[in-house]
Image (cartoon, rainbow, N blue to C red; front, side, top):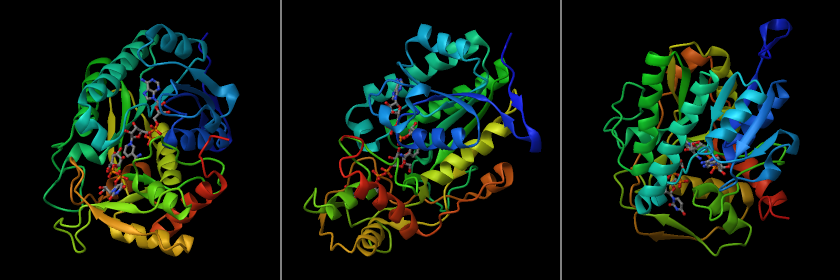
Length: 341
Ligand SMILES: NC(=O)c1ccc[n+]([C@@H]2O[C@H](COP(=O)([O-])OP(=O)(O)OC[C@H]3O[C@@H](n4cnc5c(N)ncnc54)[C@H](O)[C@@H]3O)[C@@H](O)[C@H]2O)c1
Ligand SMILES: O=c1ccn([C@@H]2O[C@H](COP(=O)(O)OP(=O)(O)O[C@H]3O[C@H](CO)[C@H](O)[C@H](O)[C@H]3O)[C@@H](O)[C@H]2O)c(=O)[nH]1
């Protein structure tokens, strides 16, 4: 007999959730939140870019998405109700240099996951999509009605899966959410878990590594963009706000329907402003040098997140970038080498 989701008072439905890529940065924060809410969680991750220490050991299954037998077994034995899918390669610059691994891991491996789900009749999924599916729109902020024209392979791979999910919803009755995150940032305020990529490519952790004395300076990739201070503008969304949106999406999945929403704060912050915020939070001078533009980088990406407010009843709680940086700084100070002891 299929283990039915437990219905507890106050209408909260507890589910069996498979978190694919749950040992990564955003996934581990979602896992912590799911467990805190009482859901039953199984983390499935090949640890290619994640850390077993970031999730409770009893929840963890090591495996690759392309190992269909293992994915099916995990779905079946744990009577999974819904999948949260974070597993992917997620670096714009790397995707330009190495598109093959992006198409393989983000497209081929995800299609294998969808097939395994179909085999076991698990048809609910929350998918990590991205702003990168929009490319460089002419108008800011970016709404969900903005055409999706990616300008780098990473964005294309995520758009392919959004389209596949829409078709799987229509043809097979999948219920899905494609959450288009803007730039994930920050860490759990307790400092227990946070961002650890090796090598690190994301702006805030790199700037904080300068403050920790692990790098001499931060290189700003281009100061000749058509933005007020010449550096790229992004919308930095706290990882705890992302986790919150996932929980809300989970409760709203319906067979045959898709929820496609932006997750951002609606505020654009330049690279220089991030460096300044890090200087203020850490009290370190953080030397910055200007370098070449990084291929594949759009000048400006800012969310119009009003649809998420309407559909998920969700709004970013962290709206001041200094508060976001402060949580990241707590994590980096307590874990200067990330999850490595
Ligand atoms: N970080 C951001 O700013 C951002 C923004 C938008 C969207 N996203 C998306 O959110 C998701 C999570 O991003 P993140 O920053 O936490 O990345 P991450 O690299 O920290 O986490 C990804 C996890 O997936 C695992 N994984 C990768 N391929 C796998 C496979 N084939 N089988 C099993 N496990 C596999 C990795 O080991 C890692 O633990 C990604 O899908 C990414 O595209 C991230
Ligand atoms: O050493 C650095 C690192 C980054 N940057 C700049 O800082 C900004 C942010 O760069 P990140 O690498 O931190 O993030 P991206 O905007 O490239 O991409 C992130 O957000 C995207 C969505 O907007 C994707 O989803 C992607 O997965 C995620 O890594 C960019 O303008 C980048 O050029 C620097 O100037 N110097």
